[in-house]
Image 1 (spheres, rainbow, N blue to C red):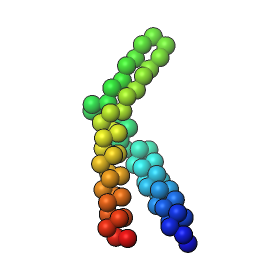
Image 2 (image 1 turned 45 degrees about the horizontal axis):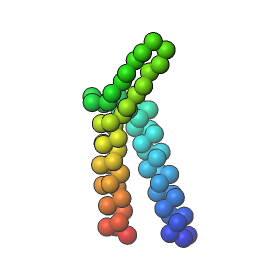
Image 3 (image 1 turned 60 degrees about the horizontal axis):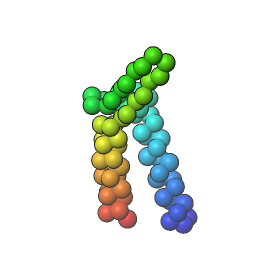
Length: 68
């Protein structure tokens, strides 16, 4: 299997794990996320969730790079 195929498999596995975590935990609604509710609209800015996801993905890619 080529390097690109392995990369796609790793990305898919990471997305699967994140999806499962978001389904069964409150990962998408952390304190610090901004929610603005108006009459007919709701705007959601997941700032803290994005920071946490960035840190986790950085660690995963660092470990994959070290392991490779």
